[in-house]
View 1 (tube, rainbow, N blue to C red):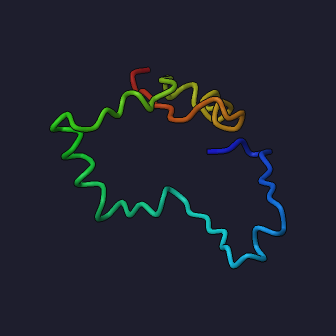
View 2: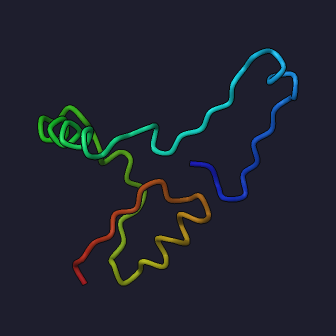
View 3: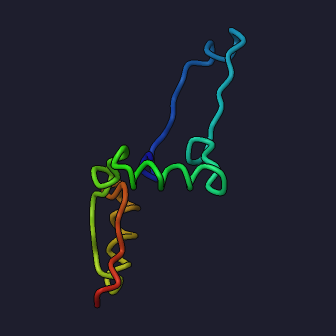
Length: 83
């Protein structure tokens, strides 16, 4: 995920050669149909989710989690409800 100030640049010729630029959120992920399989993969230890977690903070510090996200420093932040 790019930083909120990130800029995408390309040369105009890229669009004159019948090329297409497409964007997507979450890689076209469909939670309703895709999430059950992801959970099963995690439970079978086929998917290492922990390597994607960059921070773990208590819920009382939720503003810090948003700051990390806005600065582009937090890929995935787990909010703990232990306080």
